[in-house]
Image 1 (cartoon, helix red, strand yellow):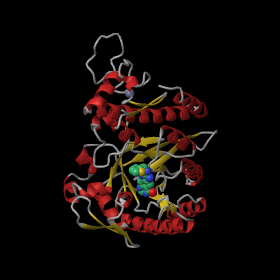
Image 2 (cartoon, helix red, strand yellow):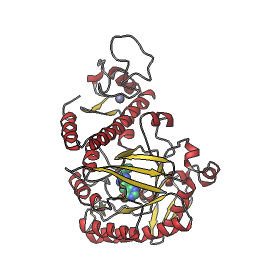
Image 3 (tube, protein in one colour):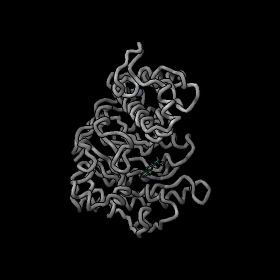
Image 4 (cartoon, helix red, strand yellow):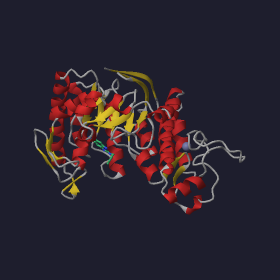
Length: 390
Ligand SMILES: O=c1[nH]cnc2cc3nc(NCc4cccs4)[nH]c3cc12
Ligand SMILES: [Zn+2]
């Protein structure tokens, strides 16, 4: 089941405030979805995710199918019971991950033949198989199996003819995904995925065909795959706002804080990206006034927190035992620089909490600005703050 209610639109852009009701709960949009590929958002307890305001997280069909496998997942009634997360979950189809496997795969109209990266078994993923797996996972939002058209083919930019061929197969797989989803009587929501490479005419054809099939929500795929930023921005400006206004729009794999604000302005409701979690693990921290690299020696003696405006557990001292040194109770940049230099596990735990909180708080500030009819002013201040310097 899925209901999407449009609460407010912004007169200065395609931005909108919405409310998404799914089987495991309500999601206020625009929203950022933390990525939990193997059934965990790396290094973060579900309770912490809830406390920082996560409303919906991502799981990954391919990885969970490989390990622990469907037999075990079934004994937990699906992914919620297994990873102890009681709010909505969105699962990607698994196709993107099979593509990322590179050589060990053969793509046919029927589906993808590949070798398990876990034990070398010969496996087969099709729209039908992907729907069967996601039905066992019981995710609230299921993604069709598609082919993420690569930005380059044989070392050159994918041609329009190649992008068309790929888009048309994804369109046929959208129909097969929908038929199987309905045959399985899956009670959740299936999203179609718009493809078409960097060709807006193909994007138009793809979205029209998917809208004709009438999905409860739509994703824009085939971006954030190594294309130049200006080409990604062109697709963002073209496609999302042409999708039905009364259905949620999901931009897959995007992006930086700036991409999220621009994506909202382009009419996107849902985002996912590995950046806040992946960058945290290599010591890159997002703050209101710009990004910082913890490894940099300039942080060695710095008593201030990562972000003086941040209320996360790392910056506002909810993880440290308060110590009356006159400053705030948050962990200092000097301490986090030390943990990074020593390779201590508490380092990535704290930077992940901070980065996820930064992304989730950014979306909360966007929702508040949309409700106040002040999104244009928010964008201007966001942009100015982010270049202020940390
Ligand atoms: O067309 C797509 N179809 C289904 N899943 C996707 C996931 C995607 N994730 C990214 N980018 C983020 C990345 C994550 C890891 C490497 S790139 N782009 C993506 C495109 C697709
Ligand atoms: Zn923080």
